[in-house]
Amino acid sequence: MDKILILDFGSQYTQLIARRIRELNVYCEIFPFDINFKSINDFKANGIILSGGPNSVYEEKTPLAPKEIFSLDVPILGICYGMQTIVNQLGGKVQTSNKREFGYAEIRAHGHSKLLNEIQDKSNKNGHGLLDVWMSHGDKVTTLPKSFNIIASNQSTPIAGIANEDKNIYGFQFHPEVTHTKQGKKIIQRFVIDICKSNADWNMPDYVKTAINDIKEKVGDDDVLLGLSGGVDSSVAAMLIHKAIGDQLTCIFVDHGLLRLNEVETVLQTFNKNLGVKVIHVNATKKFMSNLEGVSDPEQKRKIIGREFVEVFQEEAKKIPNAKWLAQGTIYPDVIESAGGKTKKAQNIKSHHNVGGLPDTLNLKLLEPLRELFKDEVRELGVALGLKKDMVYRHPFPGPGLGVRILGEIKKEFADLLRQADAIFIDELKKSGWYDKTSQAFTVFLPVKSVGVMGDGRTYEYVVSLRAVTTSDFMTANWAELPYELLGKISNRIINEVKGINRVVYDVSGKPPATIEWE
Image 1: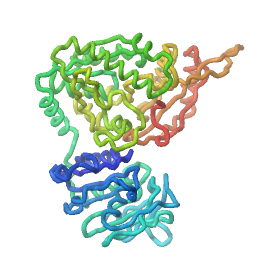
Image 2 (image 1 turned 90 degrees about the horizontal axis):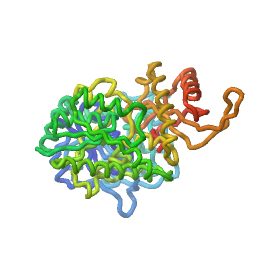
Image 3 (image 1 turned 45 degrees about the vertical axis):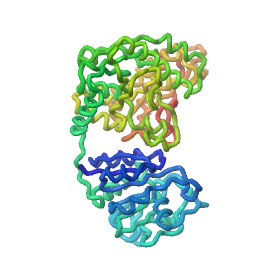
Image 4 (image 1 turned 180 degrees about the vertical axis):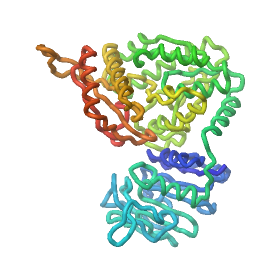
């Protein structure tokens, strides 16, 4: 099987590179930049990509690519910091720039390079190809290494792309992996398929077989506990593990009082009755609410919810003596936002209660069969496992539940109001056909009151915000342009049917700069 190796220097976009490659049905893996060269050599990659990162190559202790990769006789592509370290390590020069670029930029392609030839968004009056790209850098290349040429530039960044075509070593200052670079997919395809000569021979059915065999080999005769939330990730993880080891899997469904409307009934019906998966239902609402009382900091709330989950699992694990593993539906975006996955190079955005290992007191080993997959890949896996479409394509629901959708202190009153409002929002999206057009939609409870009027009386009640986004990878997202008529209908229903809410707003923030969830 052909494959691409990505060396991670700490970019928040590193996993997007992997996602774009997998979209081409080519297998890839991410290694930290400082992994030993033997591991790189043993991987037998068709090509190597060096990611971006937060550092500057001229710093005293700057991350470097293993020098041996430049002698492997495989194509290399450096992105942002990746390009800068290629330049620095091969004899060129990088300096800080007084013209920083963050966001959209237009670049001109030069020299009909193998990598960019005939790839363009438009052309200028002289017939030169132009590309709309996404920049994110404060340093710039000022001197090229020997035998390198410029293949892309603009006024702010005279050296925006480089190439040594004899050795198939390339670099871009911009990010082809993000969707904002309009021809980014074509550029990555050109590198992976044409230059690296990779065959598109990786697919989800093959992954299912591999994953099942890996689970069987890892688990053996042990029993496995899985925290089932009812969301897509934990549901697909449950089915995959059940497929591998059957009744050795016991799912624990914890009701923490922060679930969606009628969630308990739906989950138990789907898994216990329809799919034959063992599910233990634990009502721990009072325990969670008591420990969350008076806490408003989002990180603190996540940590409390994670801690209480662990304690509940500990109690249930005692009842299953042969349980040696705790399975979780952790996926790539969870890992990334919790600081770079196994590389631990990226900045922390927010913690996830199911990321980062387990306390020793739990006495269980961690099983995360979806850890290397993106959301759309998880859905593909669910289809391959035979799950129903309405389950597989259900919008994501975070492990901490409504706890990250109630801003400030969590109270039962707030959760009850939010549950009702959110159910109305989702109901109307499904009726209108917009549910399947959006990637994630939900309601956020705001801990503020506003003045309103109903009939002839004054009201002073709470505000909720609607949030709906479209995305292919959940690493970047655009707010969904829902019709005004639909938004009006949703707002009217919530205000009229949910006593305690008198104002509805709509979130029009993209990711970045916002995250999809509010907390």
